[in-house]
Amino acid sequence: MQPQGIPLDAYQLVAALLFTIGLIGVLVRRSALIIFMSIELMLNAVNLSFVAFSKFHGQMDGQIFVFFVMSVAAAEVAVGLAILVAIFRNRETASVDEVHLLKG
Amino acid sequence: MTEGILFSVFSISAIVFAFGVIFRRNAVHCALHLVGVLLSLSGLFVLLNAQFIAAIQILVYAGAIMVLFLFVVMLLNVKGETPLLTPGAAKGFGFFFALIVFVELLWIVLTRGGAEGTSQPAAALPPGFGSPAEIGRILYTTWLFPFEVTSILLLIAVIGAVVLAKRKFA
Image (cartoon, rainbow over all chains, first blue to last red; front, side, top):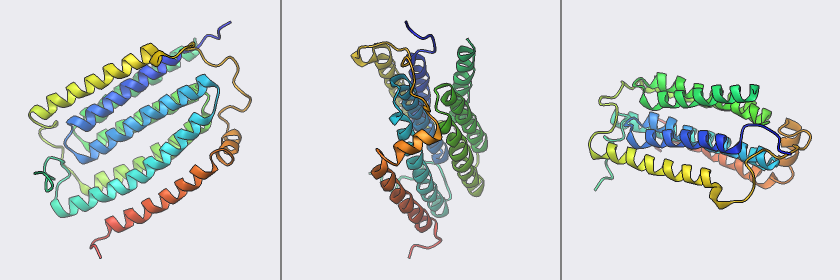
């Protein structure tokens, strides 16, 4: 007997869509701030995928992974936004197109 | 039935808010749309029996991390960029690349990576699934070492943020 419910594929589809939207944001936006938000979007899509797999396998390790992803995201945001503030202080811009000192 | 309605509402609002994040001009609007995505996702987490994760999603993400984002947006006072998207061939390449990734993800989801089995939930979840007590038990037994490493990572991040944000590099 199969319990009726939302199938795993539905959650994975939503996660795939959110990940793709975040990827579009990273690739086509110019503001470094929005690129950071898009990265958060992609991390959250993966979190949804983890939690969905966790339920459908009946094991809680997926939820622990989400916990770690959240702490890494917090560390990443703290350092990333500090870098952004430093860049803005030196260059007066947050656009990634205008920060090209390393471009050959 | 109720589960289906809630799933539809939360997932559609998450996707609509996600489009708002990447296509709004004003960075503050983008940040508020991202809060919408995070709240919708925490609703989905509750549907997936992850109550504790849903709670810390709201507390840590929608609370702490988004406040940090809004703080920096208002500190930098960035104007809405014109044009909105990166110009030239890079934009077309970006959309094309994202489309390829989406088709790949879709293919993996639909074929399930060739794995056997159903896509229905495990017949009976263990008692206390997703509760703080059970999460704490696993976190401090099986995952104790990664947990300690994470604390060191956070310490390094704090030091790095302070050093980077200092007015002058010593």
